Structures are given as C-alpha cells and as structure tokens.
Amino acid sequence: MKKWITSVALILGTFGLALSVSAAETDNGDGTKIVNGEAGTSIPVNGTLGADNTDPDGGIDEGNTDWVNVTVPSKTLFYSMPGTGTVKSPTYTIKNNSGRPVTVTASSFASTVTGGDISKVNSLNVNLTSSLNSASVPVITSGTAGIATATSLGELANVDGRLTSGGTVGNATDLTFNYSGTFTAADVTSQITENYNLGLTFKPTAW
Image (cartoon, rainbow, N blue to C red; front, side):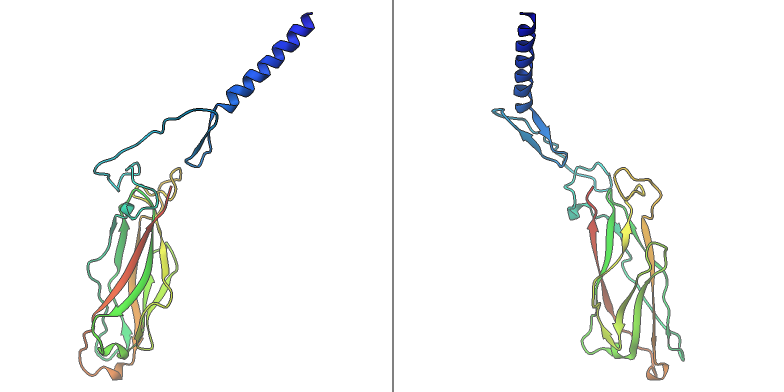
C-alpha cells in the first residue's frame, strides 16, 4: 500500500512539474522569450528622452547611427615646396566620443572643381600615422581622384576605451592620419591651389 501511494505521489509530482515547465516563460538569451501556456505576458519598456550618445547606457537602439559622436578636422591640407616633387601635410586626429565603438572608413575623394589641375598630382595617399591600423589609402592615382574601394581606417574604442561591453579599457579612442604623395616638379611652374573633399563614413558597433 505504501509503495502504491509513493508511486502515485511520484506520478502526480512529475505531472505537476511538467505543467509548471510548460507554462513557464523561457528567456532565449537573444532579446526574445517564449511564452508557453500563458494567456499573456508583460514586456519591460525602457524609454529615454534626450538620450546621451556618449553614455554607454544611453538607451539608444543598438547599431543605430544615433550612436555616432566623432570629432573630425573641419579642414585638412597638403602642400609642397618649390622645386620639389614631394607632398607634405600636418597630422590630423579623428576621435570617438561615443558610448559605442565606431569604425571609420575612407569612402570617397573628389575634386570640388571640374577640370582643375589635379592631373599634376601623380599620387596622393591618406596614411594612418597611429598604431591602430596599417591602412594607406590611395586617393589620387595617375592624376585621377577617387577611392576605388572604401577602406576601413580602423575601429575606435568607445569613450571609456572599450571595444566590447565587458572588455578592458585602454584601447585607442582616436586615430591620426596625414597625406603623402608625389608629382613631377617640372610640371608645376607656378603655385597651384586645388580643393578636394575626403568622404568618411562611421559605423557604430552593436553591443
């Protein structure tokens, strides 16, 4: 008799456990959950007004360009001295102020004047001078301006120096670059001024 009661208790216990499991909400670990055997559920709503994109907990949709907060030069230049065929330039900095890491890509380079003296320049490159990446992007080749393939200049860590939400601090939050190039000195008999636009794109990393 005792054995029979024990068996029934075990069966009922198992049945009760099965019922509770089938009615449970299961977190899938990917931002979704399964509601099984329930008539409804509640979903937390986190609303942020005036979101701060420099705050890692800023409450902005992951991967959205609203995360982009980057300081770039408002103007850059390159030059040569008379009688030389070598291009020089200052060094410039791009800095990430965002709560998320941001990848910087050199996407376009074009003269702002049609039919200018760009043909005088044999080559011009955008060179990273920091240790972030070894990229050197040709932007003028044989007197023709343009970037054949958009080239990543590197991923800048977030404002805290992190590349991932649980990562260590101290990663590079900025990169530096300059211009280098060549032309035939004999082709330049007087001062030439040409204006260009360097196009950059920014992609925030989703955490």
